[in-house]
Length: 437
Image 1 (cartoon, helix red, strand yellow):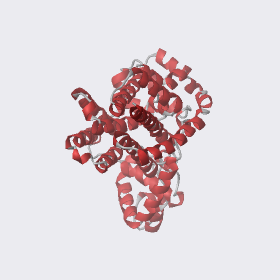
Image 2 (image 1 turned 120 degrees about the vertical axis):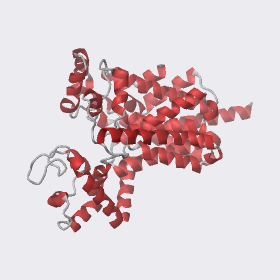
Image 3 (image 1 turned 180 degrees about the horizontal axis):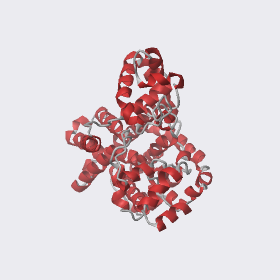
C-alpha cells in the first residue's frame, strides 16, 4: 500500500484523480450506459467496479495497488526474493524519477500497457517464483489489460514472439501462460463487440483509425485522389480537404467523417465510414506498401522521442466531456471535489511540467546502462532488459505508426527502461558481492 501511495502521488497533489478528455467516454460506458463505437467495452466497466457512483478515488487507488504488487512480484523474480525496504525504494524511484505515476494516477487504460508488459514477463520467465493463485491472478490481469486498449493486443502478441526468440519454447507451460491472456482478451473483445455492435470482430470500426493515419501520412490521400471520382467513394467529395491531421479527421466537427458535403452533421460518422475505410486501407496497402512502411517507421521514431507528461495535465474538453459525466453519475460532493482540483482549475500543468527535463535525463542515463546489460548480461536480467526494450519499440510502432505520436503513449511505458536499469545495477552489485564472498 505504501508503494501504491507513492505511485499515484500526482492524484494527491492534484486533489483528485487525473483525467483526460477520453475519461468521460469511459465513464459514460456504464453511467449511460453507452456502447461507444471507438472504444472496447472493458475499461469503463473496470472503472465502475471501483467507483460504484460514489467516488473516482477507488479507480485510481486500484491501479496503484496492482502496479505496486506487480513490481513486488518482479523484484521477487529478478532478485530471488522481495523485501519491503527494497520494494519501497523501487516504487519511490519509479514515482519520483520517472513518468510512471502520471499514468498510474490517470483514469485511462494507459496504465495497463506496463501492467501487460510486466505481467507477461513474470508469467513467462518467473513462474517458479509464483504461487498457483498468483499465476491465475496474473493471467486474468494480463487478459484484462490486453482487452482494455486495442493497442495492447498487438503489443502482447509481439512480446510472445520475443519470448520465443529468448528460447522460452523450451518451457511450453510458461509459454502457454503468456499466450492464455491473449486468447482470453480476444474472446472478451469478440463477445462484447458481438453483443454491443452486433459484429463478431476484434475492432468493428478500427479501419477508420487506420485510414485517418494513412491519409495524413499521404498514401491513402494519393490513392483517393487517383481513384476519384470514378471509385464512387463518399470521400471523393472531400479530396480538396485531404490530407488533414488524423485527430481532426476523426473528431473535428467540420471533418468529412462528421459533416457531409452539404454541410450537414453526420451522427456516428465513424461507424458510417467504416466499410469504405476498410476498402481504402486495403487498396492503399496493396498499391503502396513501401510508402506505408516508411510512414510507419517515421512515426515510430517520432514516438520514441515523445514521452512527456504535458498532454494529460490540462483541462481540455473538461466542460463538455467529463464534468457532465460526473454531474450525471455522482454526488454533489464529488462534483465539488472535481471542480476544486488543480487540473480543473487549470493550474496543474504549469506546476508539473518542469519535471519533463528530469524524466528525460533519467531515461538518457538509463540507456547506456541497458546497453551494457545487453552486452554483459546473462540469465533473467538479460531477458528482462531485452523484453522491456522490445516492449518500448513495439509500443512506439503500434501507437505512433498506427495511430499518431503522442507524449502520453510514450510516457506510459518508457519509465520501464530506468526501472530495468535499476535492476541491472542491483544485479551487478549482488554479483560483485557474491564474488567477494
